[in-house]
Image 1 (cartoon, helix red, strand yellow):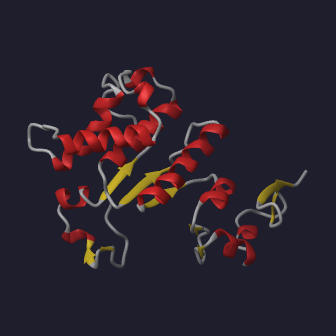
Image 2 (cartoon, helix red, strand yellow; image 1 turned 135 degrees about the horizontal axis):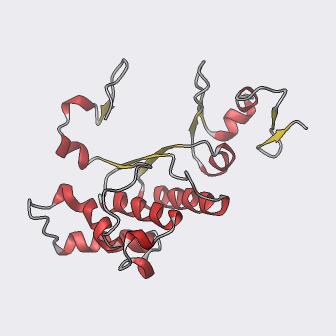
Length: 203
């Protein structure tokens, strides 16, 4: 969606800019924080849009498409809501719908931008646990940006810390051991406790 700054982006040993839009839609699904164009769609209708890369110009759904859509709905626990209009949903429910749409697109890579924005702590944890479960059970690669560092430490397989210097990458346990979290914030305000993997505000 944006021009790269430098270097190469590759997927399956092929430069990303050599993929056309249709080919990319079969490889990568995307969940953004932007509002959808119309909340008058039902949950089922919105999730079904994830099958667009596979359908003809009429958007006709085959049995295989319907099966994938229903599996996505069940996996994200939306069966009781699938006939509701999207404007009737809470923020947490709507975020699950957007994840289900990406899941119905059936790509090997899912990208999410701040998937827990505007959610309370319980729903933040619920969404991130859901992503962890999807990655584990479907063997998909899920990459997301977040400010929920403590939750990410508990639930992510690997993390890339954007600290404007060396941007360390690795397993959360490795990053803790190498004391990278201790340098994220000014120590006169916030300290990182390696024993509890949490941040403490200096009073």
